[in-house]
Length: 131
Figure 1: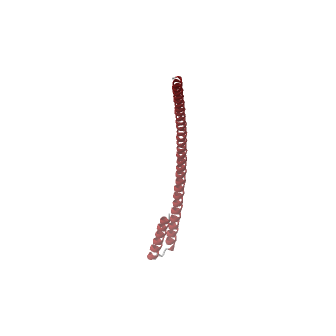
Figure 2: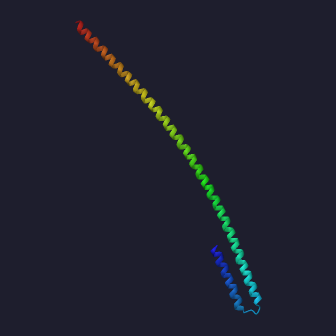
Figure 3: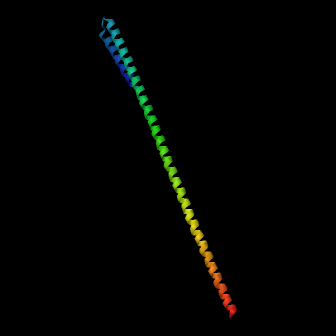
């Protein structure tokens, strides 16, 4: 936008200088040229302002869309994390049940073995006592 203003100001200056160099006897032509140059600068400034405004609207829309996309991606990621956490917890509970079952079976087998040993020892003691 600044370059547009600078270019238009330079054009105005050149038109003004050209008018001075001619030293035209008709000052109304110079005034008319200055007026047209001023109008051109004003029109260019308005167009540039409109272009900047349109660009700002596009930028705002793009930012809003990007923020919506990020929010959606975050929600999807959170859902996946929650699902994975729930699955991991379920797997851990299943593993704990398996460990408890194996531990229970182990204690039962150990108790059975101790019982068998106690019976064998009692039987041996009984046989010794009979002899």
